[in-house]
Image (tube, rainbow, N blue to C red):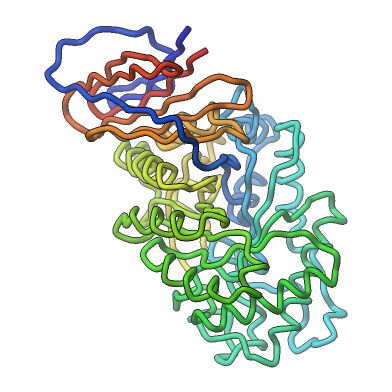
Length: 433
């Protein structure tokens, strides 16, 4: 038995279709091997202050519909992962910390600014019927801990504050636990080599290694099992950064995996190189979006999502976390006007949901490739694809056609046999049982 779901540029949006025959000269066989590779962690998006604020601007029925679009495993696309910022990010209403300036005792630590984000996460967990696994990333320590005395425009964390900053992060994790949310993983720093006009902080490779050692020990002292990912920046330098940190056995013992973003020139082979070199570490995609405004209804943005997900997962990535869950039709709010797109957007004044084509491209993975699915190794001449064995014993094949022509795709493997035709600029998910 086979089910096929299809999204096309001409208008289908994750619709179930029947197998059909199309006369075409374009044929590609997916060769499936007996070897398996990574186990998938899941898919998700970021609970930014911008997203929480946008949800607060609409009525409860529309809000519920929007939340279900992501987190309901039946009605929506089954997100199970999430990302939050430690202190503010650019996708917030302003720059903020959780302590008063120069409070080295951290006695003033107060998480109340995050309450609306916490409420959204708890709501998501209720809809999902399970825990949303949260990864947290700092954009900047408090300004007074940095050498430039500013949360923005890079700067570096002063060495004398490494331990205090690690203690601050532990207080953050415990504060979220007390609200019913477990922080499953951390990154050391969002985009550690980016000097931005918004919250940012520079960590050279040796700086990050030192922070890994201090944060790892501080988590251990607090009896927290929160996992640490390094890098959390673009693919192009992920292998170089991982190589520097992981050559230190002590630092490596604290590192669960390598996180990365897509704001580079699609250097997918860096993902493969990193995966192949560090088989005991876990690769996680932690941020990607279409920059430069809202890009409403753009199919090209959807194909960007599909292309990146296809390549990164094929090269060993275990999970995919999109950036903002919900932006308004300006692509914000963003306190430095760094406006972007999101798969689901909100037209605030008519209180209307907008599902961009990118939402459906993500759905082809997130709804069907459940946590614990194992990617089976495979190859083809040119068609983008991934093959998974789910925990329920069913095989899932995701295939994508970015060309202007129909594509005939087939497999004759004993466990995964199918024959399908992809229209131009389309994506399909096949479920075989």
